[in-house]
Image (cartoon, rainbow, N blue to C red; front, side, top):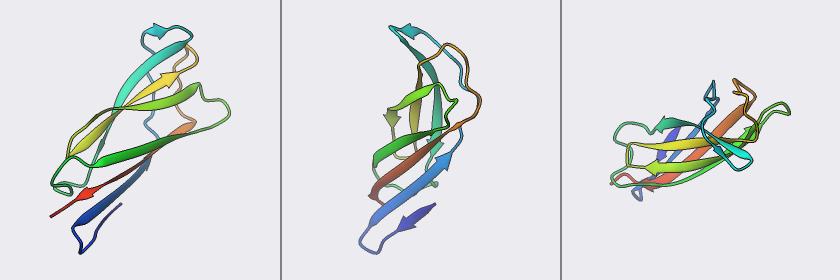
Length: 103
């Protein structure tokens, strides 16, 4: 979802289940997961927006958090972190809110 305001501000919301998580390198007691990309509405932002995100877990999910890795005006990349070495296929969703300018 997105909204363009007459003032030139733009907002974007996206909530999704990224699906299968691939477990990567152990970093102490945590494991890196894969990256997921959220594409903003085409041409929505004229510059790199500010992005806020959160992860919502089911009780069986091993996901412990997400980290924004890269933001450009067309999309953002999010890395998943896990507390277990078992790939988690479902049970979590990621919510993204981005805001910036469209004119």
